[in-house]
Image 1 (cartoon, rainbow, N blue to C red):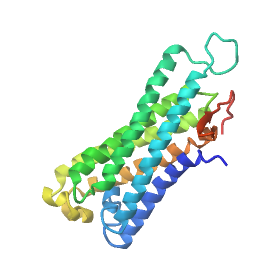
Image 2: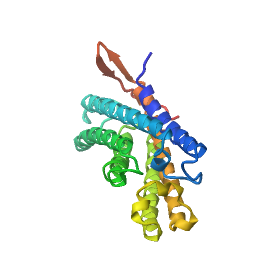
Image 3: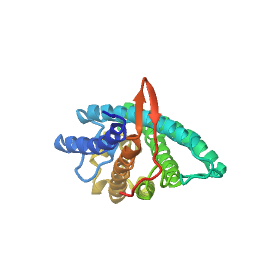
Image 4: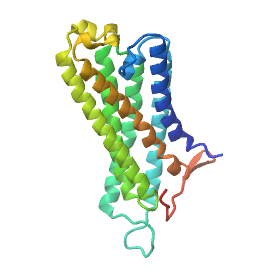
Length: 269
């Protein structure tokens, strides 16, 4: 049985499962207001904090593993790509683009490692106890690295049409990437506006009182808008990672070594 497709699939499932689980637990235990808290706020209090940390660590490890395997897969494809002057009907890419793919491929590996380290910081430093560390060394770097990784993989997917992936897959990744950028941008703008309108002192905003943000606190509308877009942005990562399942089906392990294949024709789904 080929287990490699389970890696991107597991990441996709973990994203959706984590969002649902910690939100439901936080609301049931009365730790947050049910109208869209920030993800980290929903996972800031026990027992949901324990599940939040465990799932984040699992996500980070799987993301780094997937990043390494995807790096090896793209490197194999580039090294075995037919040259443009060869007489064949296979996909050919000029040398300049191959150089760019190789450069982006290395960046993609580093970005996935950065995401792993960033989500570990998010898990280790709760938003109600170490807000600055949580944001500066955790949430923001994870967001930036993820968005840049989305761009790299989307651009690479367009270069690999139709041999490695279909145009449907490339367009689907572009769709997910654009939505994630839109949601992330709205989230950041809303957070910025919210912090100017909020009436709570900073000492309370950075601690547990933030979990019960309401209309009386000030900046409530911006808080809800930013929290909704944060949830949507993270949710869009599930289908993006799930889109790699087909490509990971072409990866096998033999005697402890990875084996890669790619076809000359990929039918659109």
